[in-house]
Image (cartoon, rainbow over all chains, first blue to last red; front, side, top):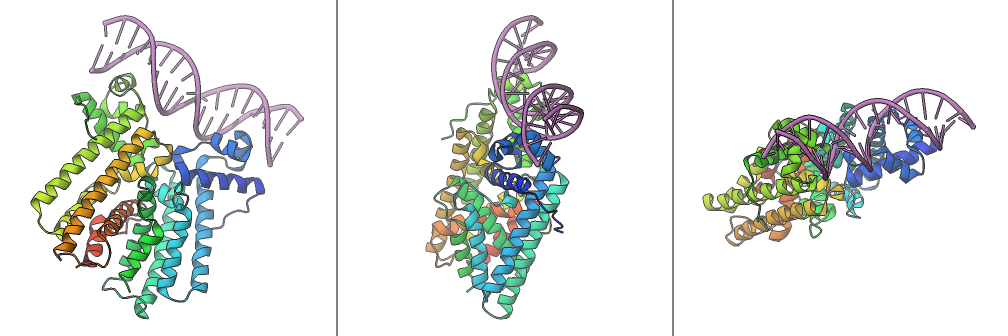
Length: 193
Length: 193
DNA sequence: GTCTATACTTGGATAGAC
DNA sequence: GTCTATCCAAGTATAGAC
């Protein structure tokens, strides 16, 4: 799933810039020229590292998923109860949304899905499935050990929590007064206590 | 807020096509050429009705908000309890998301907010505030009359419900197995019974 | 690996005839 | 109101020198 070729230092800076732009203005909102300006290289040089825009998009999502997966593993190692783990999970999104300019890479790409290259879409889908599987497992453990209480199935709660957090970033962009992922997550979790 | 000039038949078809495209591929994902093909007119003719792309975007959101507002009023007239009203509200989104190709106009534009004309953003913000105000009122009434039970404030629950439903459409696009707005709404509401 | 230069295409927008 | 024709800028991508 993540063979992710080694990236040269220049390629890394390009991926950094691309992720930044995707979170800010979306895949259809940036061009190689923007990347070029951000990294101080010419367009042709960017193309040398990533032959097409789709290649670049795939690289961004692969790395993003990879990093996210590492964060999820870290949470499980560090925190021992389901409520704590789920709160830390919400904080991952809070962090991304904090400057209010950004949104989850895959939240953005999920919205744009109908105009993306299939290769990019496949990576986005992988990201969501990765998240849903992790949430389901954490929630299932919580229900079993009674650190969480709910009449619903773990898989349903997982989809709810993910949708809530993704939606929180989206709505929070247009309505500054709205609560962020962290507070909405807390409210959700308080219903499972 | 919605002086919305009268739209000629041709202008209406253009707005229809533009809304369709925004829900499918987003504001940055369509061009006047796409509109042109959809309505069977030349680009220049489209420009005659809407001088700029931003003008067209504003017209789409104004009409969308206007129609949505009418639906909300209809719900209040038709249904008398808060749970019923909130369920009907979720169905409005379910309807838009049903063919899985579409997403809420303002969910999409909210994601793209950093690359939109300020005039379009203002309309999107208006849409969300309209929705939040309606939800807050309905939920407040429900809490007062005990058809809803929650330790949280109506305004917090309103943001939660809106974020959940917007997120549901977004996630549902990439993960077909995910539950839609209706089922996620039901799950949310079951926690307030 | 990076550059200049350049195709080629699309996108937003306007002028002016009908 | 709609059309043809056109402008100019931007976007993706490639060729070939350094």
